[in-house]
Image (cartoon, one colour):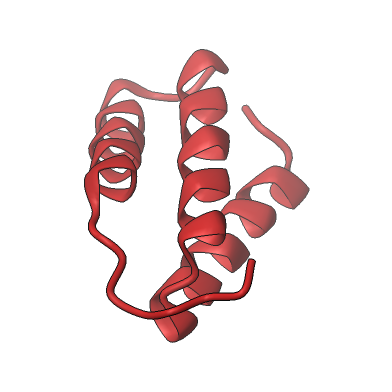
Length: 67
């Protein structure tokens, strides 16, 4: 099971993306979600991480971001 710091980092990036629209945060969150999928997690959580990663990777920018 991934450590809590990895989950916290992923959720933090998701929140930053949601609050600011920062594309950089979305891409980094997608990368971490992909990494989580490679670790020992249950199938349902893996599917959720995969769906979230795909959605973040395919989003159009909604807001301007300096990052």
